[in-house]
Image (cartoon, rainbow, N blue to C red):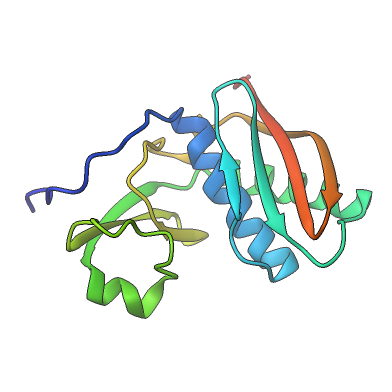
Length: 155
């Protein structure tokens, strides 16, 4: 199948960090029943994500997040793409972050059967390329849990 033409992407993410962001989002949704991050700043050296949570996760839960993301990374899951219409996407995804001028065809990024979301960013081909996820700090204020993290190089 010929790849559809999508909107121009306005930034060049680090594929490892951006792919890890997807895993963190799914892990937070699974563990806390929250939505995906309300704010993200993803960079090669370190990144941060903000989640709307009713309470701050405990130190045990912080370790659980880190352990689960690393467990999924070690599964060596394939990262694949699917192209669907916006109408199809409405049935499967929260569309509020889709830009007004988005193309009629949108791209879904799948990380194995662990996560799927609408995304036009750069990703690895397999989670084995990501490295080791490490939460370097976190805080909680006014219902927002912020985690700062980095990726340790592949060994």
